[in-house]
Length: 299
Length: 256
Image (cartoon, rainbow over all chains, first blue to last red; front, side, top):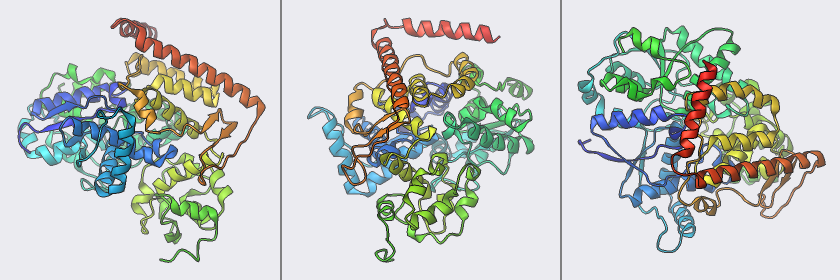
C-alpha cells in the first residue's frame, strides 16, 4: 500500500447509532495513519441476516446497490467496519464478479429503480475489506509498530472474533483459530490472552427475539475470557459489542457470577496506542466502563 | 451424482432448488454440524436430523420446526461440513420456505419482518421504529418490559437514535422489490402469501382474535411511523436533536 490510499467508507446502520464510538475511532485512526476514507454518499442497509429470508435476490441487491455507489464515486475498494455488513457486501461483490447473470440481475433492478439516465450501475469489480484487514494486510503491522507511541503495556487483552469476520472461509484468517487481532494487540504492546471461545458465537442475532439465548452464548464467551485472565475484551463488530457489553449484565445474572469485563473496539485500542486523545475515542459510551482498567495502565 | 432416482418428494425437489440446499443429498449423517452448533440445546432436531428429514421429504415436520429460527448464522456447521453443504444458508432458505407456506410463527420470524419493513421505509435501519414494529407484531408485553431497563441505559449512553437516517429516495429500495409486498402478515395469526414456491399458490390461516389485535397493531405502527416521518421532515434543523439531548440528560440524571 502507498501512502494516500483511498477507500470508500460504508459505516452501516449500527455505526450511526449504537456503535458511534466505533465509527469515530475508525475515522480517527485511519486519518492518523494517512489512509483516506471517502464517505459513500446515500448508502443503504446491507440487509443483515434478514434479506435472504424474504427474497434471495434482495440479499445481493441491497449490498450491491452500495457497491454501485462506490463505482459512481470512482472508487474500487470499500471499507465496512461491521462484520455483518463486511460479509454481506463482500459476498455480493464476489457473486457479481463471478456470475454475469447475477450482474445483469443487479443492473436491471438498479436501472428500473431510478429515472432513465440517472440509474446506478455496477460494471466494475469492487473489493470489500474490513478495517482490521486493511491494517493487517494493506497498511502492515511493521509500519503500524513504528507509529505506536503509547504502548498498552500491562493490559491483558482477549481478542474476540465472533463469526462473520472469519466465516464463511475467506483468505484473511483461520475460521477456527483466528490470530489477526491477537497479532495486532501484540504490536500495540498489549498482552495477548488466548482462550477457547474466541471464535464462538455471541448469539447477537437473537438479541431481541430470544434474549436468553444471547445472554447464555455471550456469558460463555465472557466467562472463557475472564478465566483466561483477561482485563478487557476487544472486538471488531457492533453486533458482538451489543451482546458482550450491553447484555453483559443479563449474562452475569444467568451465569451467576460477576464478569465486569470492559469491551472495546480494536480501533479504540489502536487509537490509544497511537497517542490519540482518549476523549475522542468514545470510552464513556460503553455500558461496562473501561476507565478503571485503562487508568491502571496509565491512560 | 445422479439425483433423479433419489428425489422422491416435491419438498426435497424444492429444497434442492435453493442455493443453500442444493447439496442436501450429499449428507451422510456424520453429525459434525450438530456437534458444532452453539444453539443445539435450543433446537428440536438440530441440523443433522433436519438434513435427514429433508432427504426423507418430511415437509411439515421440517417447516413447522423451530430449528431454523434458532440458527444464529455463525457458519460453524457450514465451515466444518465435510460434504460442503451450505447448512447456514440452508437454514435461511428454510425460513423463507416456512414463511411462504404459512408456517413461520416464531418470534424471530416476526423480528425479520419488522426489520425488513423498517429498512424498506427508510433505506436504513432505525432501531426505535424496529422495536415498535416488532413488539406490536408479537404483542409480547413481558418481553418488552424486560428490555426497558437495558433500553434506558442504552438511551442514557446515546446508543439509541431519536431520528431516522434515511436514504435520499427510500422508494428506490422498495422499488428493488427487497420486500415481497404481496406477502401480508398480520401479527402471528394470519399469513397471506401471494407468491409461493410455485408462483401463485395462496395459503391462508386465520384467527379472528389475533386478526383484531393485529389490525390494531398495524394501525399503531402506522401512526408511530407517520409521527417519526413527520419529525424527520417537519422539525426545524437542530430542534429535534436538542430535544433528544435534553431527554438523554434527564434519563442520565434519573439513573444517577
